[in-house]
Length: 595
Image (cartoon, rainbow, N blue to C red; front, side, top):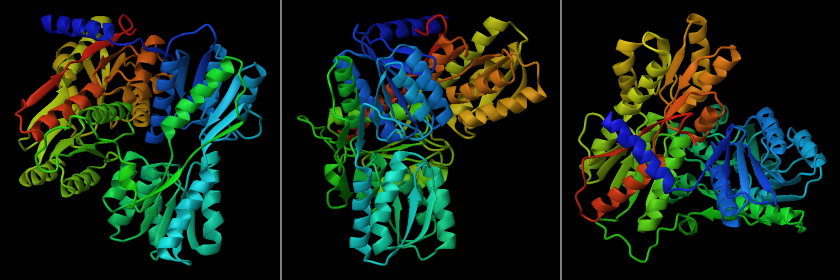
């Protein structure tokens, strides 16, 4: 009881030292309310690093200008985006900033917003069929032309190439394909052109199929870096040497170019796009006129200039280093908001300390993570920070890193079977015990419950399941327990199956919020009222609790985990000793303390 009280007091202190953040039904509100008006930002998805950065740029500008901004993430669902926009307009926003999932599908919702006097700015992608106040975007046609001409200049005219297209209907995808064909149709031989929906996993799958049908492909243009990186995985797996050019200049793409893998990418400025949109929205709120079109510059990034686009790691007082003094961070996936925040915390601390940090995203692929770690070690890093896809599968790669003198810190999940320098993580067992005890306290002993487990083999999944069973096995009736791989869609599917087999379930413990939110969708679809408790305290989960949907979650501090790992890595680089384990506190979040 004393430990729980201490955790609650810690949360109160933390909230007292930070700014207020308001989350409303899946939307996040930032900045200060003003009498003049507010802004709504409808973004296509935040499962893509480019749009995460765009939103961050918008948030920072909104905070600086003191204007209220509400962000709604459509999750790449055009129907949800329509609903999001309707909700934003109903809330009384003055300006809508929209980054469409589909440039045609969003037209009706935008027209409706305009008819109600709402000003509209589109970012990165256009809104088709309606006149809006402003379009802010990179010159996607020019960018793709630069990328394709680079292929021509490197491989020569007539080279055999393939194209990975973006989301069908998205203006950025249309424009980039146009730019590619403006050059390729007269100078190259295009043998394959197919959508991979701006997604890394699809990029890999589509590329594998292309290589089977066209083994003589020499070059690939991918309409974003996520697809390009997926294509690189397929090409590496096939043992081929094929030139790959992407678009966006994400951190992973920059690192790939530095490592001699990807050939090039097109640098946009997503943070500038976001901040420029808010700046011009504020002008509209104040009654000023703005330009109808505001272009944001793009640049070709190759091995010759890539270092100028890498994260600035300079500092007036750099860390005293041993060896080359750099850090590699191998993260399980950035398709999960928790790990996006962890990585951002690590990047900010690296910049503050003036230490070089290279991030590799394993995309929830244990084999790729092994390869990523090998590449990071080969690049000469001094410290490896690893967030394992699988706590057992990563052991060999970690041992090989240690054998070469690399220090190792594990974050959020453990590395099994080998001794490392430090483990930094939340107390996952305690967190799950708190969550499960809350079910007992609310529904009483003997309540019928189900468990959604995380990725098999991941230490966080193992620990959270242990914490759940420490309480549930003696105080509840567990009728179903199954993995949903920390994934929202799988959470929904598994929950649907559980409800069919066990219609009397009263509560669910999900080992992360993504699965919990998926379970909520299945429960709502089935017309049932079932208590759901998650783990992570993501923005969507907090919004769901505020809306009276999810019952509770466990708050971790992913940004603090990331920043702490870099802080301790820098100490290792400087020759200091660090503790073998650094716990980061967790807290139960319910309707009573969610705000």
